[in-house]
Image (cartoon, rainbow, N blue to C red; front, top):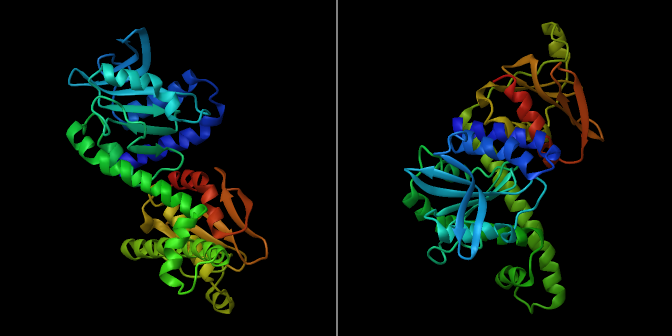
Length: 357
């Protein structure tokens, strides 16, 4: 949990500072060095652990440099090449890593722009860095499955054999997920044909394939949505969050007024509650999260306390809003069109939750 919290803290920093980082040096100082120190656990001010501008003669090229070399047990274990925050990462950016990989004993290489981290090794050919990473981390969209793998690369836990044993499976899982993501967004003809041939008994004409393309896309969307909802409900069953009683907006209302108040908590509001909980549950104990439904809004609170609001859902109108709070507890409403739009406000929701943790 502590390691995850450190990642989330650096994630917030990346979102906040990233757009202002216009150079590679600014990116290194603001994001990469904190990643090396806070996340991987290396002392960036100790040249026996972190060697900046690491230099080695590579073939005919003399004096080439890679941004950082991480040392453990008196041996270079990880090479790090940095680009500026706004630069997209591709294998073309890793030319120096390719050369240094063969010239050093390092078996792990990292290419980063401060928020995206690509991890490489030599699975395809010994001593030659692979063209595709075996692991990817985006601090601004953290994949929970990557967290334990990143933890293996910390100075404290670093075990090369363990990392390499997992790398091959990680690489192929990552590539498979990438293919599935492509098919999810725009299924190819062969992918559609795979399902249609198992469902449709007639001839798979172009018209039928076009029809099944839309059907497969819709089915994938519904399947993933169902799995997310099942997971959220299971998590709620396991953690048992507090579900506060329905109360009117006025905290001073007496019992008679409470009885006369007619409030209907909708399924959409409950789903909104689960979504918010899934976003903030790594920042604050889910047992502390409650909701209160009122006639004008659906409030999500910490410790069942109106003075500790996370957000408000205004769903009882044609235009839906999510209400977010600043440090002075002033609410600002943001229009949304569907529940998934709540994820756009993850950073603000986590920041608010952190003030109560």
